Amino acid sequence: MQFKDLGIIDPILKALNDEGYTHPTPIQEQSIPILLRRKDLLGCAQTGTGKTAAFAIPIIQHLYKSTQRSVRPPKVRALVVTPTRELAIQIGESFTTYAKYTGIKNTVIFGGVKQGKQTDALHRGVDVLVATPGRLLDLINQGFITLRDVEFSVLDEADHMLDMGFIHDIRKIVALLPKRRQSLFFSATMPPDIVKLSQKILGNPEKVTIQPQQATAERVDQALYYVSKKSKIKLLIHLLQENPVQTALVFSRTKHGADKIVRMLIKAKIQAAAIHGNKSQNARQKALNAFKDGALHVLVATDIAARGIDVSDLELVVNYDLPNIPETYVHRIGRTGRASASGIAISFCMKEERPYLKDIQKLIHQNIPIIKEHPFIDDGTEDETPVKRQTRPPRKKKKHDFNRNKERQESKNKPFGRSNSNKHTNK
Image (cartoon, rainbow, N blue to C red; front, top):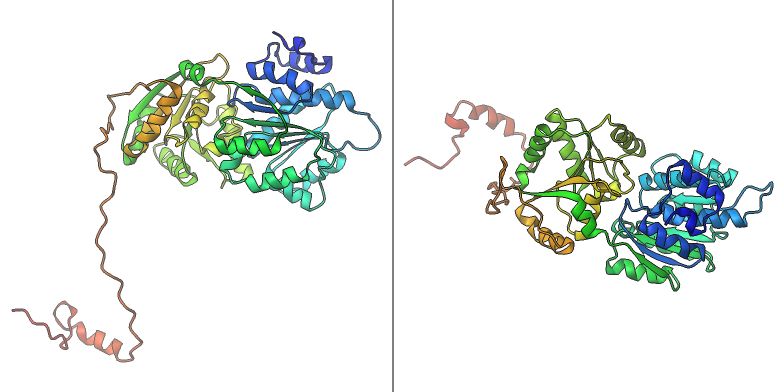
């Protein structure tokens, strides 16, 4: 099947042809006809399967067909809410690409930067607004945005929206939307909390689920290293030095951990940068652009910040910390096995992470091949608990004594600094 068989209008087909897109991915093939019928949709598919085009193309088509051009600036008629700045920017770029022959305008708003340019764009008028939750609510409260004209709403990467604690913001946003609208809900994973949230947002939705777990796992060459916690960084440095790659994406569970990994890599003369929620927008974008352009070979990221990283020909994914949600593992390794491409994904596993490994292998129906020979092998028996040093209880502060200096001076003339008032004697 080709895009032209899905009932897509010529201006969008022309834009797709410019990009060399002729055949839809499975999520696009199944979703676009549903959305063109203005049905609500609950979609489950991992990043890299073409979700953005699956919802952007129908929205652009509906807006184009119903738009009456006038001297007034366009109103926000489509809203896409997504968890991270990087993903918001990527979605905005996709809308720009697919809509370039339609006249449909979009803009992207997110926190971490001054709002001036964003509010200027809103004042000029946009048809499609792509936003992160915090900045969206902020500008609504300031009166720059109204959602009363929204006809199409998209909640993208809903699972990580919940992980980032955006549930209350999402409820506030949904409460501001018109009841009569087409609602789209996309998530890479579908745990119970996500299903419950979707039921509150969607009416009677059509459902599309693309299950690439087995296919992704088969396309990606996987390897597992048993290693102690303290030796993980040594192993990472060893592997990067022995097998240099152009692009390696390293996943850390925490922001602090990501920064620490980068410091140790730089110390070993391996250029690396971290992106996570504590980094400024400029720092994140600079690191991401350098990684995409090939100027930076190693990028260390948390799962949340990694949403929106779209790097073609990503050579290596490293699970420095195994995720505690097995679907997240599939999502991570899929970044190096996009479309029909293959890739390499290696995982470090310390003793405490073995339950996570069990859940992952159960999900992908595979036992990840174990690398049994490496300089930092850990058979799982190493004690990861550091020995606590015994410390003396803190001394009580003494009240100021004007004779203290005099006693201290006299004590300098006594053995070991003891004063004559010490009643203890050696026997």
